[in-house]
Image 1 (cartoon, rainbow, N blue to C red):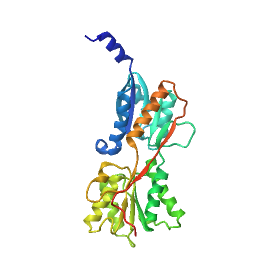
Image 2: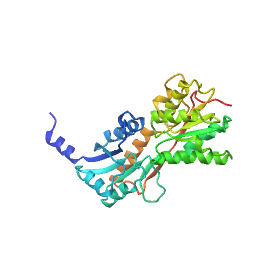
Image 3: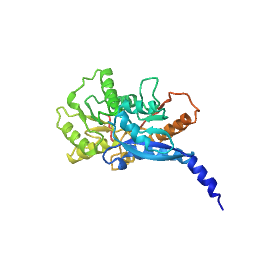
Length: 291
């Protein structure tokens, strides 16, 4: 028979890790959210911590964040899946001396604990690949430009064009907001541009999928008439008769590494700030063609 008193004591001794996800439409069908939760859950399951999932508004002020976290019993630390550049959130947890890690943001200071990828460098690699295939009329479908990932991927796109002395065309930069329907609208606009771009860098696979759907709807063959690169290496990249050439972003690993790092901070096993940059790679599909 198990010793109930011992079990209760061990349970009550557990501290809680909060996984704070910024709320967005369809978040629970989002590859990003699911993979982050997978990596975090895997590490928490093997630890002596409990896990709570909190959804929050990225525009929250410091006092609201403090109140939000004050309701968590035995709070050990917080994993922010993203902060969309809102440093007030970090200021709030720092003031309360709450251990934390920010995921999917790399902040260029010597103070903030963060784990992520180099979105700018990854975008540069994707656009360089299209240029090596002979493309010069390259468009980009951006994500939500309130997020660091979208801003840095756009910056990477622009810098590669400048490096190769390819004139930037403002009409080739359209916002898809990390949304399939908006990406379809963006692609419809690009299709009608003159000259029409020969390649599109869609900064998420969901948007790349939407772009391909719109191209095919308009009887434009991919990759024969237009090449498309995505970002994420999500399962959607392998769907359909056109597989998407994409940038592999190790999201589950990001969740895992961030959780391990947070536990090290809580237990006093690591010096702060913690900053870890994870590696990205190109995954080749059938959505691109050499000119």
